[in-house]
Length: 494
Ligand code: NDP
Ligand code: BG6
Image 1 (cartoon, protein in one colour):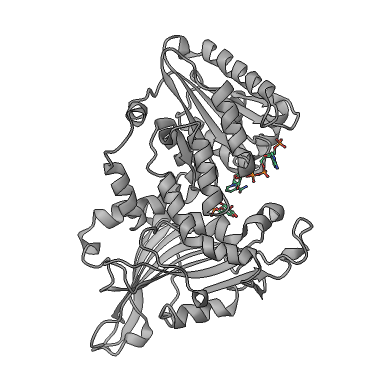
Image 2 (tube, protein in one colour):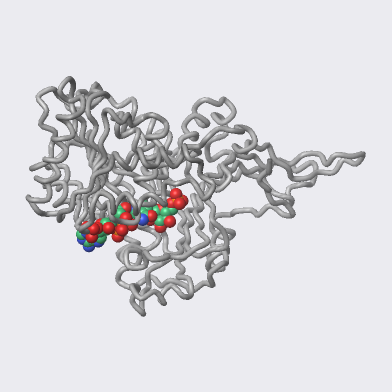
């Protein structure tokens, strides 16, 4: 099942608990308290607070309703936190006075509470602060809404959830809600993910839990649903009769950069592939060893937080085979790597050869439909056309929908911005459901366990390259990918 089919089904699912129906009709006014737990951390400053700021600027967080709380163990004041965040919110050196004022107004909405992740005192303090805010704001006339964003290492999720449930749940008689946003990686394998799901599931119901995979909030990922189901063009094409292979590729041109300690515990499959790249779940066959290539970039172990003999992969290429009527025989190649030659994420659907090849142009390349998530959001279709001129020659070209050119002036929201707004609105369709999570861990757990035991070795590769050469070999030999010759898509410039 594809991501889109999954999400369409999810929307249509009628088997929801009364609580989920309540939440669907949950109020969207009244005081709103947004609590960022782990406020002193990397994600909070780089993504969570900037996303909240953008929502504020666009009027989604009205100051007469909203208060934002940062919570962490670090002992700092409200102003210390505000000053730490300021640099991540100011657009640049040339910021106007108006922009700087907006940043200051936003920062004034933020309060900081210090406490540990398992202490009654800390969470009672937090509850007191939230309740004070609620009594000052509109909750006297309406319900109160509490959103807890866990920008924290997964090890503390269970205790934090327990503390929230015990000391910080919304108690308003007038109604309202409490919602929890949890970050990835949600578990390390099938067993630990299920255990975490059970522990959190005992405290909160599924409609209150928002498991974030920020790739689901990216503009072009969201467009896939519309593209696939609102265009007649794709309906007869989207199957094994026409599609030869599908590649889902994530590349970064930098290494683990200060996150080596975290990364070494997880590796590229848990960090990227199991969540961001994997939305095809059901009917996936067990992964074959000869369809996996692991790599580790040279210099990765120089990081003081990474053990000298670490085998943790920073690159992986894995072929998934889907055993169903639509996709039998079409390899899905998932590839992700750190410290590669480019920063880019795209989905590449390669079509089969044209039978007959009457223009003798088959060698130039196949039709490919490419969805470029980043950078330079675009969708383009590689086509063979007649080369302009008197001769009947063929050339590779493209139908190109480049967002920057086609939607000039339109702002593409950051993934986190959109997903936090979805959480406030109670819309779970772009979050990871428990059964979806389980299915994705089921696919990768056997391979991950073998890597953890050192039974599967990572091949060294040079930073700034395409990763281990073996990965391209597997792509050509096992997945039957055909490279287009003499053609590179160049994103149009304005
Ligand atoms: P950090 O390592 O920066 O941790 C966040 C905060 O948690 C820290 O400031 C610290 O706050 C507290 N903390 C750190 N380690 C521990 C520990 N062992 N026990 C208890 N508290 C601890 O993490 P990130 O901000 O990078 O990531 C947070 C979550 O978001 C993680 O689940 C991560 O996987 C996920 N994520 C991160 C991304 C990123 O780019 N950073 C991207 C996508 C997801 P204090 O000591 O003040 O309490
Ligand atoms: C995070 C990973 O989930 O996604 C990081 O933990 C990675 O390792 C990041 O760098 C990539 O996100 P984006 O949106 O910059 O492509």
